[in-house]
Picture 1 (cartoon, helix red, strand yellow):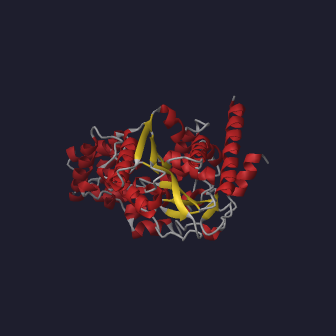
Picture 2 (cartoon, helix red, strand yellow):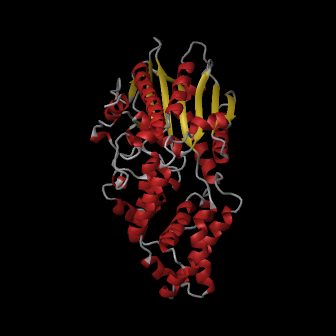
Picture 3 (cartoon, helix red, strand yellow):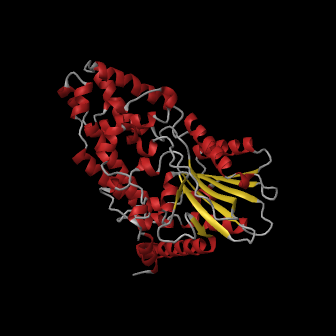
Length: 438
């Protein structure tokens, strides 16, 4: 067993009682609230914001953060193509039911809103980041109101929605305290570690091939066709790729929650029996591609080596005598956040599951909605001892493989040693993996 795999094995030795219960029954959860079917496109939601009292004498003084961009428009009009073409053909053929005409109008409204806005931050996404920042400020006021620390460095992916998320987050902090001194950075230099690609370029292709095969086997369309078309046989003749048609309607429905100003509900047209496989196929695919899956997790997690190194080096600098750094804020994507959490062994992504069926244990709605984030809150006492508490989506979390000093609070020297070992193991894995492919 390699050093990497020894460390990896340690990270997945998790107390089951510490894990969040995401899906005792995936299908039943959707029946209770079909909007959670939006998964990674669902607007931001957070867990319990209660803080466990810090050990006596410790006060927060520095925060290191990574946030996914907020709610956005779909990144590509391609998601709409099959649905658009099918609905237009059906309308021209005069076979849309009254329900079909309602769906047509809503669908086309979403398509129209996306023109010239593909991938951009939605108004709701801006609000999400302003509110996360405001809660951070109110929750840890000593971090942002120190006479000796007022510097806040903000780094963003080069993608506009991340830059706009950074702008709204920092604007909110500035409203709280205009004396904060902000630095804003973006460029390929920063993008290269905020969302570093996997060393295995074929993972996406392999995972998507699996998704396509499962979709063809599990995703039905009969109930949706019964709702939308007066002549089901004619509809089948007009719409050759029927599973893709349902998926297109699903994708439009998923993004409606982010475009809340439209007040549209498209997901309601898809029966739960046909919605369920659409959701779990995508959830399983994302887990396999970017998370701690049994098939590809080693490779995916290790793509976060440079991002983890950035957390460590900036924390080291913030702890130096004379540092004026109050916070390091990073704004990126879910595909950067998930590997980082897997590499660190944070509770939400510490256990490896098989990609197929991962939704029974792990659900995108729970873990990576729009605006999902990770925060490390640093505390210090008068003796100079440092403790760290971690928050995932603003809720206290833990690294099950590492014992905390007290409650959710970790000794920074011990946590740093653990994280450094994860970084080094990831670098060794990447080097060996590349060598093995050449």
